[in-house]
Structures are given as C-alpha cells and as structure tokens.
Length: 290
Image (cartoon, rainbow, N blue to C red; front, side, top):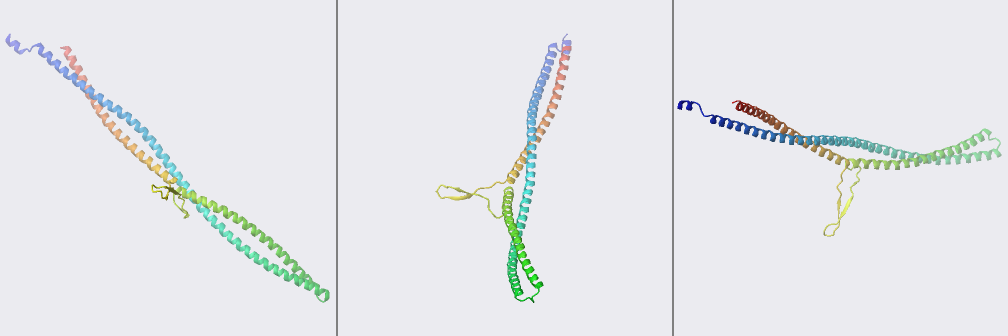
C-alpha cells in the first residue's frame, strides 16, 4: 500500500496544478486583452487625428491652389498694366510729336499767307495800274489787262484758301492739345496703376505719403509709411499657404506612419490574444474532461 501511495500522487495535487495553469492562462489572456485595448484606443485616437489632419491638408491644398491662382492672375494683370503703361507712353510721345509737327505746319502756313497777302497786294496794285494805263493808252492790250486781273483774282483766292487751311490747322492743333492732355492723364493713371501693383517707382515720382508723428519731446518728425503692394501681399499669401500645406502634409504623413505602426502592433496583439484565448479554452476543456 505504501508503494502504491508513493507512485500515484494525490488527486488534490493534480487539481491544484491545473487550477494554477488555468489561472496563469486566464491572467495572460487578461493582460493580452488589456494590451489589445490599449493599442485599439491608440489606433482610434490616431485614426481620428489622421482624419482631421487629412481634412486640414485638403483645405490647405485648396488654399494654396487658390493663392497660386490669385498670384498667377495678378502676374497677368501686372503684364497687362505694363503693356498699357508702355502703349500709353508710346501714344503720348506720338501725340506730342504730332502736336509739334502741327505747330511747324501752322508756322509755315502763316509764313505762306503773309507772302501770299504781300503778293496779292502787289498783283492787285499792278492790275489797277494796268487798268488805269489802259484807259489813257489804248495801245495796252486787252490780253495784258485780262492776265493781271486774273492774276489778282487768283492771288486773292489763294489767300482765302490758305486761310481756310490755316483754320483747319488751328482746329487740328486744338484737337491735338486735347488729345495730348487726355493721353497725359491716361499715361499717369496707367503708370500709377502699374506702380501700385509692383510697388516700385517707374516715373521718378515718389508715391509714399509722409506721416507726421509726435514724439515724446514734442518735436515733430516725419516718417514714411511702409507700403504694401498687391503683388507683395499675394506673394506673401502664397508663401504662407504653401508653408501651411507643407506643415499639414508633414503632420499627416507622420500621423499616418504612427497609425500604420500601431495597427501592426495591434494586429500582433490580437493574434497573441486569440492564441491565448484558444489555449485557455483548450485548457478549460481538458480540465472539465478530466
């Protein structure tokens, strides 16, 4: 009997050992479940963060595209303003040159009129003299009288026509002066529009407005107001939106990498949990069977 008792352990020892094994397996399953829950919570948090960052990235990309579109549109407008300023300058120079030529023509016509008036007076005096001589001297031919009379008439007609031409020149000169004034205004406005866009002086006239500032000692000083141009503001806006896009892209990539890493760990933890759960179920089944 003593030998039999030595070879066969008590039933209590076997049951207690199985219970310890089951408890260990149960604790391992609990620990694995806690690990899975922790990883799942991190995954959920990173997924939410990633979704928010993707939304921010989409908005940042749209803002960057809009800023670039605005910048490109302004560049086109700047080129158009430059062309307008250049064409206005060329047209203004042409009008000034035309006005100078009109003045020259007016002076030449005036000189011609003076000469014609003098010539007409001489011819008319000659005609009157020939007519008087004809009255006292029948030998003077009628043809000569007709010729000098016709010459006087032609001279008078020439003076009249030249006066009409001079009047036309004066009218053209008045129109030219009006056009020159209008073109000068257009050139000034086109130039200032171009300067406003690029923020630079192209006509040598400073556009900055002095601002009076009263310092603590009471002496008045003049400071120049810093000027921001449309081009500089849109360039700055594009720089800001580009930086925001790059920051959003970097944050999104980093978060996505973290999410992929933690999802990989979650998958491993889920596999480990499933294995432990299977082991625990098998151990429970074996314990019940025995």
